Image (tube, rainbow, N blue to C red):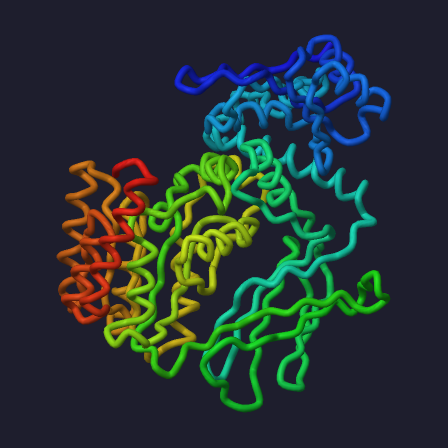
Length: 492
């Protein structure tokens, strides 16, 4: 008999009827006898007949069929994930089929003592086991769903007058539905799960067409592809479209699957560029823990998340520059996985934050379940941007929570002429951390670059105005933006 797991209701939230996540026929049989009128049951598709669904609904049970089956082997991970993040705003019972419990026990079994000296930390081994479970389960889903149409998912590219950089991914399923501000926490969790288990297609041929010429590449093991497009003549500033197709995959119309990518070339009026972190700089994601980061994003969606106070107005002021019409380009470098690209672009647009190319991280399922370092990733992506714009200076924006100050200081060491200013949001009051930042501030200052530790966006904007980076009259807008955010966000 299945043993549902129970997440206790937070005492500060209003009581709501129990909800059940049912993954197997045995679980359905038990919940049919257990569920009271007013309860909600989330079912894997195909578990119940139409008559069984009708009987449940006649008994006053709200039945929701999941858009795609969730693997029973991951039931324990769903419970621990929800519990860690406090996602569920109601009583939620998650079915734990016996096979899933046994599988988790086997995967988490300790190694022999003679192997322990060279074994990684326990949390890393457990994270690897969880990731391996996820990967195996998702591969089973892929085999079952091999008839899904292929999808080319291009990301926002960038370039200069002589070269464009395009990145994307090939998946074997249709795109996710758009989320709304009315979506429940459960809907957000399901949407995040579908992003994280997106079915990559390795070894797929991808062709790019631009300016009458064509380029071809093959997707890697994660389904990713990249192009460096060399135009036949210099490109003007603005957005440029690159046509993509899968020559070996036909759509419903009998033609190769196609998509269009956009690559942005900075305007001639641009005076500097902006490279910003996202995690804990634009919005809070708790990126120091990959699982908690993913769960925080699952907790809400792009409609319901809010940026840090005043960020939107400050970034618009930087984009417009001191003259008000410089059109300075923005780039976002984040440790968030590429799976969340759509969420993050939607978030920027909905919150009025200037959209620019996002350079995210390639993560497998096992990486989502454990803490991973991100410094090398950010360094590599910033270096990529600087290679495209050797004559441009940049304003770097991050936070003190992780290693942004150290990463940006390393960029200054390597490229002292490329960094105009560094703004670090102070989110860590630990005196030891503050002392370390003071040393970095002193080191960076020897190159002529300033590293500013800012408590909020208004402070950073005031300094930027004094340095001639933004128009002075934009300060009122940043203050107003922050006041509006104060009404929506907790203080801090």
